Image 1 (cartoon, rainbow, N blue to C red):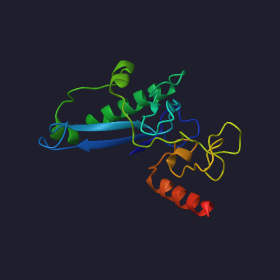
Image 2 (image 1 turned 30 degrees about the vertical axis):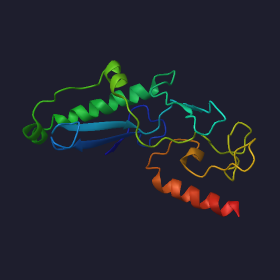
Image 3 (image 1 turned 90 degrees about the horizontal axis):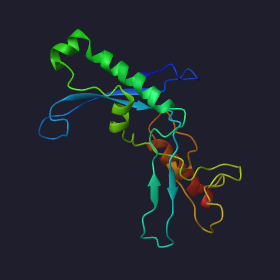
Length: 178
C-alpha cells in the first residue's frame, strides 16, 4: 500500500508498505511474514566514481542510504515502520501471524536493516544545465560517442517502478541516435 508520512510536503504518498511472505524452504524469512517499508522520495544521494580507464575495473558505487543531513529519510521510514507495526495489531492478522518477533522502528534498527529498493536512478542525470552529466539526447558531456539510455538519465527518484520508464528512455534515445 501507498501511504503519506507527515513529512510529505507535496501531499503525495512517500511511503510504500508491502508484505513479504515465503515458505520455510525457499527463503531467508523461514516461513515468517514481513511488511517491508520503502521511502519513495529519498533525499539521500549516492555517487558513482569511475576509478580507472580500464573498462574491466569496477566503478566505485556509494549508495549513501539514509545519508541526508536532515535525517529526512530515517524519519519517513520510522513513520512507515510504525504504520506496519499497526497492521500487525489487527486481530485478524494477529490470529494468523502471532506476536511480532522483532521491530526496527528505532533509528539504529532502521540503519542496521536498510537495503536498496531496486529503483536506483540518476547516476548520469540529463539536463540542460552545465552540471548535468548528459545532454537532452543522453550524450555524455566531454566524451565522444558515449550515450546513456537507461534509468541513469532520470534526475529524480520516481514514485514508481523504473522498468517501463527505462524501456521508454532506451527507445527514445535510440531514435535520437540516427
